[in-house]
Amino acid sequence: MELQRFFCGESPMTCSQLFQYNPQEAGPQYLENMATGYWFSEVLFAAVELKVFNLIDSEGRTALEIAEALDMDHSGLDRFLQALGALGLVVRDADYYFNTRLASDYLVAGKGGYQGESILWRKRLRSGWQDLSKCLKAGGRVDFPLEDESPERSAQRIRRYIKAMDNVARTKVEEILPFFEGLDLQGKILDVGTGSGSIAGGFLERFPSLTATLMDLKQVLDYTRELMAGKGLEGRVSYIPANILEPWTVVREGFDLVILSNIIHAYSEEEIPLLLDRAANCLKPGGVLVVHDFFPEHFSAKAALLDLNMFINTYNGRTFSETWVRQQLSMSKLYTTELIPLESDTALIFAAKEEKTLASLRLDGLTRLMAGIKAMGFARVRPINTETIHVADWTDLRCQYGCERYGQGHCPPNSPTPQKTREVLKGFSYALLLEGEPLGERFQRKVLEAEREAFLAGYHKAFAYWAGPCALCVSCAVSAADGECRNTRDARPSMEGAGIDVYETVRRAGLELRILRDKGQFVRYFALLLLE
Ligand SMILES: C[S@@+](CC[C@H](N)C(=O)[O-])C[C@H]1O[C@@H](n2cnc3c(N)ncnc32)[C@H](O)[C@@H]1O
Image (cartoon, rainbow, N blue to C red; front, side, top):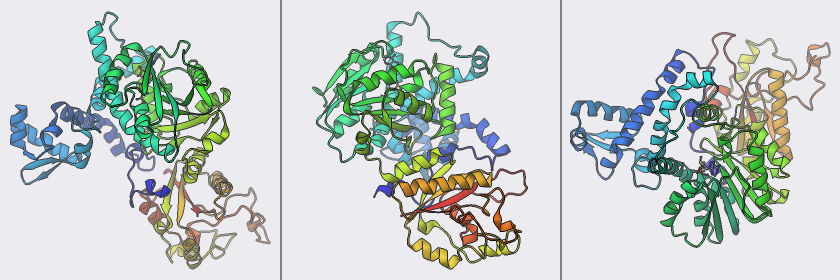
């Protein structure tokens, strides 16, 4: 059951893959895709603004009907609809356009999963991004809100911002709650910088004995109250209007759950330790602090771009690394978990005053193990069923005919035969595919470290296969006259030497491994860690 959320079909497509820069495939096409990135956004912005998805949600419409409803030129609109079709947002059946499931779930205003306000908020930030070079020259933000902004305009801006945050928070809380599943959460939540209140609200809806204190700026809380009013949570929510940079007025050790969701990227490294310290002081001895944010260790491109977004659009916001945040938390005398990635672009760190509190969370063993292994420096850690591993009888031919290491050390014919590998795999139901980079020795040492971590985490059968001939020892005894490996403790078979078709296995796991045409091309290494 636990594994279910990791295995989403033969070729799982995550958002991190969608945007991942793959140096092996980089070329003019990658640059062209980056240069035309705004084409994608502009189409989405226009479709959301025009409420195209609302128009066709209940029943399909023809291009002519949509053009009439929007008072637009028919032929241009037809081309626009075709672009929406090519981007997977609408489908055409005969002359009729319908929403795809994605558009119907997330782009129809009024539905619970609607993301349109967040999408249009991104559009509003566009002009700041156009000033990127100016910001770089100036060393920071150049476009500041009007000083004489009227209270009405300011309230309007805040409402738009909070609605946008709300779209995101509603989906994020659904990803966070499973870590608390099965627990009888009771007591008090403090949601610091609550925005719309939807993160705390999600907890209140799931755990009926909880109450929540929502803290944010007064102007924001005025709107938060309105948003919370319709949720039937009256009597369980209280509000503290406050500037969180000023001393907090909440009770010390008064809370069972303290939430800092998308707060730390809003401030500088001078301010964050203070905020984390205050959050730690609010925790009861058995309480949990949840830090939810963007981290370079989880989704590096998005975290780096968000960092720039904060550079352009805020005074001193930025993204922080997992290592730095965990250091700050430990300076506030809190124990922490590893970075726990969500399926989407953000990740969590849980912290508590007592180590045993963290053990009670539903951080299943595999989640923690994967997080720990990724932190060793692997580019990707992908869980796979062992059925995905393709064993072929031809792979040792490549070693025998084409590799000078044939017959040495643990290379064929001294490695497990394909038949042996098939038998071994029958004793394992899943594995981790680890992606890294050369050098071989460094990669192989990390693989050994990952295997050891798995063993210590209770996977007593953990066994690793790595890429290429063994490169562990500075001077390999096998090359010496007697030919005997003196490091059988650490040596492991290579995948291909043991009959595993690495290209096919990687492809089946939804990743890509291209054949290199010349030596200068970027090499990716894969290893396999069998687990049971
Ligand atoms: C990015 S939003 C996140 C909202 C919410 N936690 C969520 O995850 O949806 C940041 C929130 O922090 C609040 N905030 C930022 N600086 C603040 C400050 N100095 N005092 C109080 N609230 C602040 C903002 O008003 C906003 O609601």
